[in-house]
Length: 116
Length: 113
Image: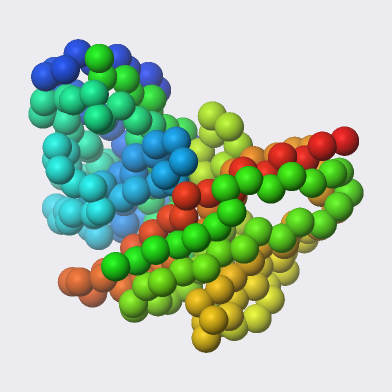
């Protein structure tokens, strides 16, 4: 099992450009999440999904959109990148806490994004 | 709102014991998790406490007091490879019936010979 994978690992964008970050998991998890991590601020939830076809906003959703067309994939889009979106982006997945009590989230390796 | 507080840095020597504290404020509290993250790596799950008391997993133990909104991670027999950042995370119920994790800012542990 590959676990959680993310594409790309690194990316440099210019202000105003758009891009999509890809996340895939092979553990048949219901829940998937996108976080950003900035120095000294821990992980902040951007958007999350509780199942195929559903998405919801997290703590810092502005400037991002997501889609969960297939259970195993969760896409994060930046329509018009800004320097404030320079960060490390982590995707994670987990079992549904309502059908399986295990609380563990499994994280991908991260995408390091720089917006100039 | 929700908030978590943990020390920003802790230093210890190999073989010692270190405790990383976490205090939280949140509604709809379900439990407290701990994650480890090495520089350049992804967070990995260490432990979870839903009930008061101590949970032990090898050299690591985690404690929760729901009445005090407080928990800690205890690392024993420290090894150089334990140098990493440690995050506490509250699992809480939010609107819509879904529960999510809210992470603290992290504690950077440096283990010296």
